[in-house]
Length: 539
Image (tube, rainbow, N blue to C red):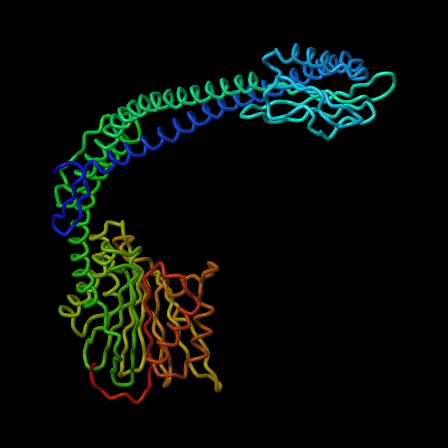
């Protein structure tokens, strides 16, 4: 592509390669032109100022010299001509005037009679002014008027007037016109010198400006190439990356910002490769995690209502990440017995989810093998052994196993370090909360452990809730935990509701307390009611 051109490739506009260089050259040229022009203008202004000051000073000093000389000559003439005018000796007056007008600086001289106010003598002869012409006198009471600038033909001059005083009486006036030709010639010479100096200054500025412009252009081209070369490399490298060539690297060896930018670009290209690789792995892991979550969702019971004779159950489960460590499910032993298992593996994520899958598989296997002979203690002991062998104490699980016997209307339960469930029972016209007290070590902590069984008779209308610590340990924006007190308070307030409604109310109360704080642990809540008029059907 030629310099300055631009083309469109693949729907993208590609700027001409010399555009930055051209801009630098134009900017440098404009800067040099402005600087040289400003310097030249200042130089020319200074030169003209000097000549103007010289001309003004010359004019002032020359005019003052002529004024002094003219006034002196006029006074001498007045002194020498006053007696002759008093005696009416006009021939002597003419001789004196003629003698004084021989000076090339004197334009003319005349004598006027004070009484007749007429010109009695004029020199040099032949001028427009005639002897005998009337004249308006200017001097008064021996006072000399200020010299007046006049023009005689095409010549400028100063007119000096002096009174002719003799014997205490003003006899007339003498007028003397001094030429300003020499002063004008000097001023004209200064003006010519001023014009010549102006031309020389302009020529000098033009020469210096041309040299500076050429130097500036060379400097701009050199710097422009130095700047645009790495920029062009970076632009070409970016285009290659945009086309998918992540192996491209730029070779910018300068030790300035462009060198730093080049190394940063190469690091960026390398990091893009790493990022794309990590992104691909992350996508793969994400897909695998989705599969794991789908599998885990099948390990946890459905949130739909579960009915077993006089028992109703409704559960809620929300993992803190894609895969959680909480687990709850139910198992039908026979038509009269129903097993509920709630567990919480330490932590959350894939490792915890694997332990919950192990626990679910263990329960399914035991139900298939032991059938109606399955007991709470055997479930606990087997889960403990399996989790210990699977996690080697790196992960453990708290758990609470509850066996419902519909025939005897009682529950048999055991705990493995799990938060104790609540039994909400109507007593003396109001609900009272009881705790299902049970002791036991966490599952997977020791290979052998006896988990004692406990039992309790159920009454019609009893409400039970099982939960994991994620519910009660959830925090508000003020970093306060919801806690079991708030859970019990919300349970007492809504214990009269149906199991699904009660479950939703408790969860709503918890999340209203959490406000904008996302739960940091998995959440599990199971609500049960015994003695309702439910159909004997399996959900």
